[in-house]
Length: 413
Image (tube, rainbow, N blue to C red; front, top):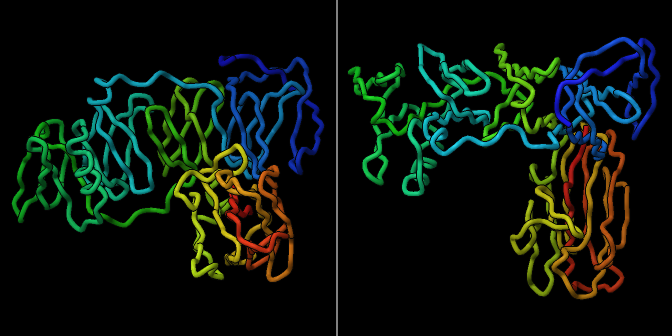
């Protein structure tokens, strides 16, 4: 149950090893640690998922309460941390319309209740996280008015442009028009706009949105926090202590109460690479009856979600028999992990041979049979520069729907 509680901590502690991960465990003594307990699911680099109550979070560890005690999990071993229950209720339609939709170049998207541009800084107020500040160059677009199906596609096209000059976008009926120049200020009632060398005030109520020219951006933050109401912010650090969340981003700290925190925290950046995110160094195919089956990324050969057994995967590969794929890894990763099996839509009896090689040395050889359970793979690829996946005919020596799916095919540092 969510809430504030007292967790007791011992002055002495012992340790254990679970899935290769060192965890510190506290026993119960009268000394007190005041903490907030929040049900979470923690996904580790090992692929295991731990359900627990989050007690504390800082820049290096997550303290989790389990039946056997409070454990310390190094964040270096954490991929994601997700709340097990919903956070605050969604905003009403009226409340959403009153907010400015701010899109940042790093993928952050926030909805602000007030907004101003002063010199090179964008100042806004978030309904939960309070006063926020961003560099002008961090901001891609600001939608000041509510959108709808009639202009949504046009706004997405304008706001995705790589510009050398700013756009002030105006709505005229069901059409978006725009002025090209330089936005020099955003006030409560007017937008100060430099048009052909002349400063032109534009009434803010007339402006549908603003798209800013691309500028030099600082190094991006790497921790992704998904918030309620389809908002996302990338930050440098996330903390939780004494029932308070703190998001730290480029020198700014934003604070919120326990119930308004991130619904998901993604620490995976820089720790792993999905093979579907990187083009292979080489791809070799042997045509069958004159047809070449080129591999697919994150979808089946029919363009549907990638499935292995009863589960679908957002990331992965679909590879046909008589294919050989090689990725350049540079010796930077420790493990190769995936779940592989036949495309569940294949109904005919079939077999396929899968071989996985590291720098030409065979690491795994598996005969797959349609209808058998998925095959989990976890291989040591320490110091390996090139990873190769070969899919070939199986014992039937023929292609009968040899479509092999590799769910969540990834390399882990």
